[in-house]
Length: 275
Image (cartoon, rainbow, N blue to C red; front, side, top):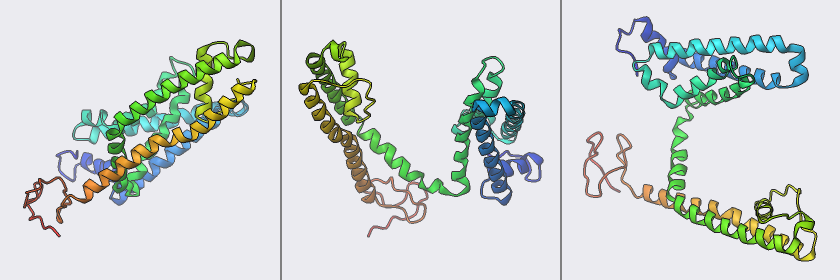
């Protein structure tokens, strides 16, 4: 929210640079900020390599604090020029900003916490604004709605899978026994989950013909089970698309949420025309 001061006031000018992403100054600021974010993350990642840390430890330490201080000042400036600083603090990007600088300060009391600075990479999400990719958020919104609509079906499916792995794990425990590594039913359940999801750690495997036959069946079953949640969500997405395409859209503002008998847009008042 832009502050209510005079447009020539320094706070308003600062707001335009920091928050107005469509302006040349705002775009240059965000590009510079993203470059700093990427450099800071690269510094943390490289600094986790022991040989490099032993050689250039002081340099990494200096760079880490330099980046942190820059982002701290930037965060404070955002709060200063924002019309509602508390509202920005609890916003999505507000939380990301504070999480980007907090680990370095936590490292003063919790050794090793500075490696959490890799969270800073989340701030690169601002690139969506710079490249105007925010228009594609509608696709993400459709996916979230589809997942929410199919949550109950997926929950029932996961419960069925859970019951199945308990049965398969118990059966494998009976077939193989402790001598082949299946020391308990929970171990058998663990094996069933690893096998069904096609992860295949190989830390435990059947040795008897019956156990291997069951393992082969579980592997084949896993391929079919993995595809089920995707199919459920895909069907829901298709249904949502069908419903949205049947809505009458206002040609002036793009609003779709109208009652079936509506003749005028509830947002801008434009007359709704139907094909």
